[in-house]
Length: 514
Image 1 (cartoon, helix red, strand yellow):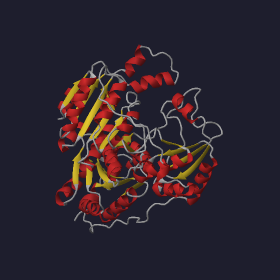
Image 2 (cartoon, rainbow, N blue to C red; image 1 turned 45 degrees about the horizontal axis):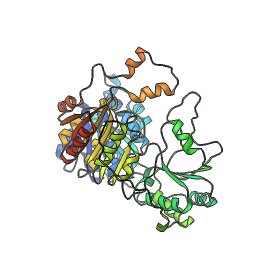
Image 3 (cartoon, rainbow, N blue to C red; image 1 turned 60 degrees about the vertical axis):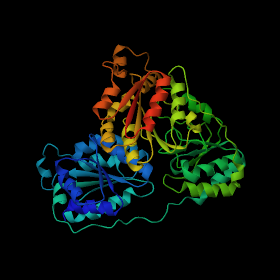
Image 4 (cartoon, rainbow, N blue to C red; image 1 turned 90 degrees about the vertical axis):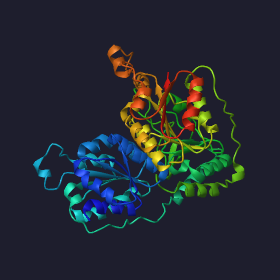
């Protein structure tokens, strides 16, 4: 077999059986190998940002890495924004990038570039295979790196001649079978703080926001009286009725400061020290109050469930200590179509076991609280802040979980960055409902213009923020990608559109005209 086939067989044998692809000339032997090897599902994206974002969404829901296939340095560069988001989310990805044949690089052909230099800022592991006989072993090492805890982006660069020359065979992945642990000292310090009775925030993200870890945090809060919150943005969060519903630190500084002002201690469970998303004139970068001490209990990728179990034992927290949560009955909204009624409509419509991917940004900041009463679901957010995140991540999540309904919430400006995701959803028949909030403006930027004290925007400034000339027609755009769409202008229309889209198979789009 050649190097490309040895790599594909190594990927499949190592548990990487999905490849999100956008190949070119240098990757054609890899493409040919896909025909010869059973067990690899290939998903084509018409833009590299769709490919890398889909790999992020796949990992968040599956917990194991997919691979990508990108064409040389420019193809990688097109995918870097969503690799940035994936890196911030600690998603594991085996990122395969083609390269010119080793002997051709010296001639500086038009597509020649420093691929390793492009890859390193967004990858924790980078390697260029030197020859065909090294490819399988390098692929196995990439799988091991991507599959660690926390997950990593492992970028393997594959020169064309290493793909077409003769190889030895497949390589076995040397997985680290040892489960991640935690620091007993960190738990000991956290227990001491909680027993002191001083106002304390338990700040969670990562594995602490899913499964048994969230219930353990609920017990600890009931026993000690500490406050439990999530980061502003989180890779995945369990939500809905019957689950411990916690709030997140607000994005807006003026909203976050009053919430955090009385805490003497913040205990970090995989989370980061709360900081402002941007710097603003005359506003703090650190959101914690002066004199508040921050203590790390677990790092990202450590066993937060085990650490929280140890902490619960140390403070004597039991299931009986869980305090009843306020129950909210969801009612289908009527009346005007506004942010409040949209939030109620979405919370009411979320089906059992859904996956909600949230890039609604300004429009959707109020959407989160009502979903505490929705049917149980998972909530995914943009960890890196690079827009064009939600439609690709929804695509990957739907590939990972074909039996679950995915609901993608996105503003019209963000959705234009990776519009091609809709085509992949149509081609693969994915169960994604995309809700586009069409306010005809980069509303987040309009708010940030005020936030940084740039003054009153004039005509030139507003022309950089508005996207209403010409007006985007999302129903037609979706149709062009093969996705059925409908537009709504009232909350009654929105309720009906949601119910229909969720009940139907395959991708659907709803344009909410604000």
